[in-house]
Image 1 (tube, rainbow, N blue to C red):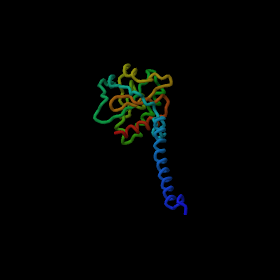
Image 2: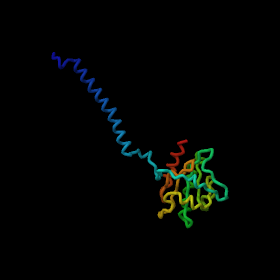
Image 3: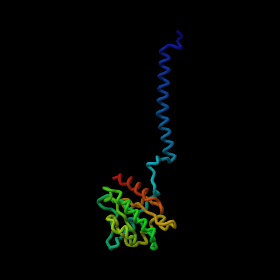
Length: 191
């Protein structure tokens, strides 16, 4: 029997190949994950539907006032997320349709609905007026001006405001409100 082909050498060679294969699989998977992470790829389930604002817009400097004249506090004991709409003065049919959609979105939150409020800058349309989550805000040019892309020629954008008063996301006019619900549902899980 040849020393180069002994059973010990054959077993040793198989052991080395197995070790190298495990090394390549482990570090290859890590390298692939690193490439995907730093290239910006994310699984479809983790992508936002709305535009994430970087940096978030701080609305604490423009404290809103309710239509009744009472101040509205951004920070409260509960973690309240807000859907903010700041339509132009001449918003008619589009605002009615948007308000109907927002009322449905709020209802679909079920047991989490208490953690979501809808803020409407100005007089809200009738379909939204009966929604318990609605907070009608007095018109505020300063608050409206602080919102990015508020005067979009395509229509009325919808914003998500975090519990501390930062606008963190903008949904473009005409986007599916199911995407707004998806984004807000993800954020509600961050308790």
